Length: 477
Image 1 (tube, rainbow, N blue to C red):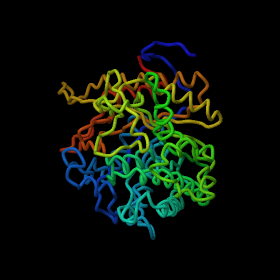
Image 2 (image 1 turned 180 degrees about the horizontal axis):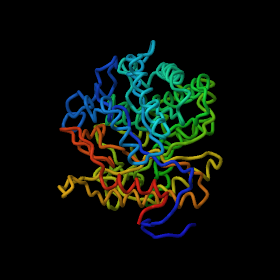
Image 3 (image 1 turned 90 degrees about the horizontal axis):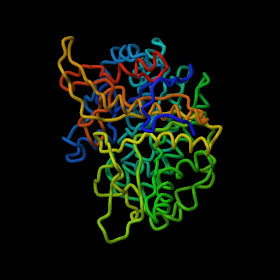
Image 4 (image 1 turned 90 degrees about the vertical axis):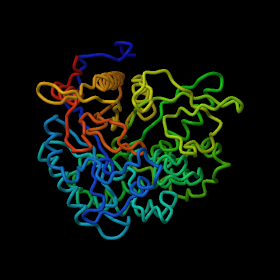
């Protein structure tokens, strides 16, 4: 066990020269231009335009207008000293209906983005899917339909053929847990369904899509990139005498149902048993797990908070503090008798507890389970209620809470590395304030503020702090 301050507020910790510092965004959250240059509608266009689905009925129609402000945003990244930029490609920009020939204008936009990154010395980390499924594929069943996984492989091949000589790391999917359970089970994310069986089918078809896409990319890329997937693995704290059983069930649905087929080549038997009343898992076909278990060179880890669980007694009011909007369904099919307890603060503006020890614990546990697999923190950050102050030299955002959050979590990452974890980099979420899914524009994660009236960018103090960390490779005091 490494030593350091109990609150993870260390300073002066130094990262190795090859550790990759960067930041991350997602296409629907920042691009805007949803009806330009041949882009087709996505499930998030449909969902955000459905009254009551997103706070304040916000949409991503304009978002940060990144599509039209690409060069200025690239310059901003360079000014901050970013060494990597994790972005996502909008499938409906490439194939407006999810199938068929490529939309040249869509490919050209991402080619400009990648070339602009490389020209500024920033390594491109491309995510093929960050939740904006073409609506036409959802109309055919979406991720509950096996054909969507097959279409995804064709899309991956198209993008790989165009950009496959320049991408440093390919990430197939971002947080398939959210796509499956929040999209098809709880109703909190697009497409907003409340069907546990479809959610579990989506889990499998997303896993399958990953495997098929990695194989397709390997067929066409001409450089030597990394291949990865990004998972929002849950750090689960058991509580009381029933906590261990509750944690086993949630760990199965949240973590092992992805890690099992992706890295071990099989689904956990206990998860199949736990969900037997929801589905018979007949959507898993012979040979599927072999297709899913493609060799990867990196596992992306997204971390924000922890959860605490116990079995519900069936009588007292059931606690639902799992960190997700309640839209009438459940993201935990087959485990509705587990309750998520309110955790001690402090909290971010999302209501999520701040616990940097969870990141250290997660990274170490993954390393112990898969000791030869390199890891990267592909998202970590915090939403706070930022305040703009007028200073003598112009407006400023003194986001001390975000700086403290990042400092503590970078400390956690450093401690994990000191314990032997092969951690290759850290992508702060998010580069800019953006459309925060079901919360619209009400939550600000960015280290750069966006004024949604003028779309002006303003680096917050956290951006300056992060730039200093990158420059010195040492956590600033």
